[in-house]
Image (cartoon, rainbow, N blue to C red; front, top):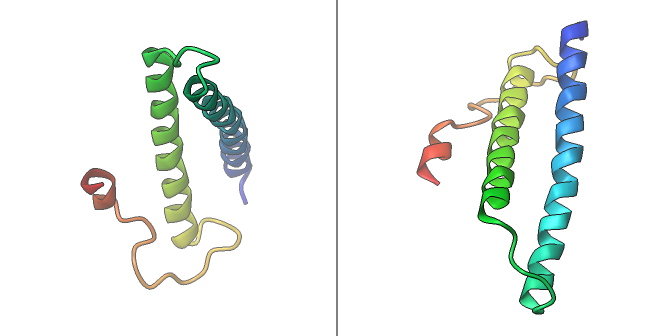
Length: 91
């Protein structure tokens, strides 16, 4: 794997780790809100988290496409497109 690919992988892992922490806090906040212990999360914060999740979803799909094309170290033969881009807009 080329150096720039390793860098991209590390950036993706760091972003996934960061958003994982945000998801945990979001879930706990929702539980606290449901139990009437805290107010709901601000709409802008919820929108930002949603945007990060969408962008990371795209990044994971792009990674899968590159792996399927043989760029990744464990690429294998995939008989169909690994990530159907139409799914993004249909669901």
